[in-house]
Amino acid sequence: MIATPFWHQLSVRLGNYRAWLLSYMIQAPVGILLYMCIDVGQQQIYRYFFFFVVLSVTGSASGFLLDSIKANAVDYEELRTEERREASFEACWSLFPRYISLFSNAFSFGIVSYYNRPEFENRGEFSMESRRVIAILTSLLPSLTSFVCLFLMYRFPVDDEKHRQVLDAMKKLKDGEPVIDPITNELIKPISSSRASQHDLNVLRHFAAFEIRWKLLGMLNKGRLYRLYSQWQSFIERIIFLFWVSISLACGYSFIMCIVSPTDHSDLQATIYLWLSSVCFTIAFGFHYARVKINPSVNEGLSRFSTTQLTNYLTNNSVSEQCSPSTKLHTD
Image 1 (cartoon, helix red, strand yellow):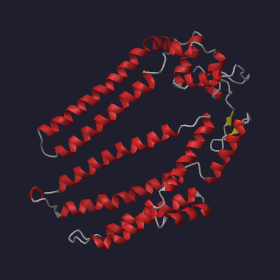
Image 2 (cartoon, helix red, strand yellow):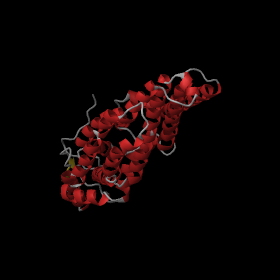
Image 3 (spheres, one colour):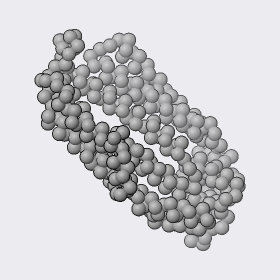
Image 4 (cartoon, helix red, strand yellow):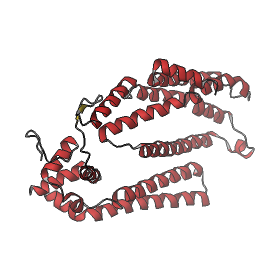
């Protein structure tokens, strides 16, 4: 609470992106310094209070900067699609870290249990080897992986300058002017404001690019593969759904067996099985509700579009009937 105003003023001077990088650059080496000061034979937590303060000042106090970076990503997505999708982005940002943290926790706890001796475990204590492993897992390893995250943050394309260009391009696009993507330098044409055009785009976005391409080939009588796929599409999607459900059930059964009949290192195996079961369950029902439940078949969804509309969608993300002479479908 005390340091947050400092980071706010710094973000005003440097910009949100640079302040975000600076806060993370200060956090990254803290774990290495903490590991160098750890004495696994002593239990004196007050000597680490300084590092806790540094992490609080740079991490927790500057956490609001991440939200501004997320807003940059949402604005760029709106520039590309002319739709606001904060809910979808927030769902992904909330869901994926949970699965990653579950797997990393299982890995960490498994290593600690592997190095801990039974005589110490029965007394509720940790051996010296386990203490060293805990020190590595809680301080050294997160700090080393932070440098990888810092590199990815540095490579984030939508910085403050690009974000200003994105906002300017969004304004021109809403006025009906074509704009240049400030990231990829591609030409973005405005989507028609009519309901029919927007509805057509929403229908086409349900399908993968190869499905639309196969539909075009089928309309040109060149798509034997498309005809087979359109006939078996529903069956293939059900098989994919049942495959992920079966994997989830198998991992769930293995998790229960590890709990009922414990063996050596069964805790690690049970956690991994639980993680795999939850991931496969999410993939299965996410695919079902996002693809099978609301998505029409290829024949039903794409039969109302002409070859010009489908070609324009593949090339320009548009459903306009007007097609430039240079636009053509590559069939090979």
